[in-house]
Length: 161
Image (cartoon, rainbow, N blue to C red):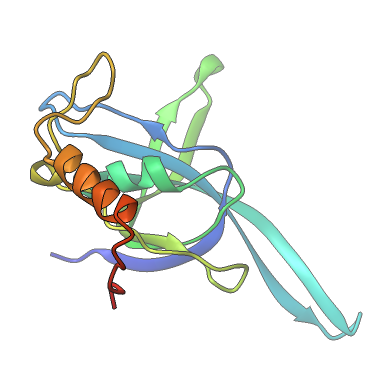
């Protein structure tokens, strides 16, 4: 299969939007603005080119992480398959837009720092009461009470490292 694989660097123009699919899988989209620059020797300075707006689509885990990680204005680096879509607007005018089926999305560290966090797996989330949020059957109460007893007796705790 021949696809146009590309990498884009731009800024999110809005918060990502969830797009549930008919088959039940999660999909999300975010538009990014990409403005390239070139050196204009007549001005002895850099000049911006026209800003291009690309709609980025993500599915499944990438969509879930996109929705919880990206906010409007964030600088992003996106790689995936470039495409386009065409439609007829009001008045019979043909419109088109660039799209990217994302394979990977990340922050552009040229403009800041980031901390990577893995989302919890379903098995790692403890049982809890949905009304109160209290964790059930964790054994944490036993640990806390033995720790409190050791502290009240003046026992010295060993360092954890």
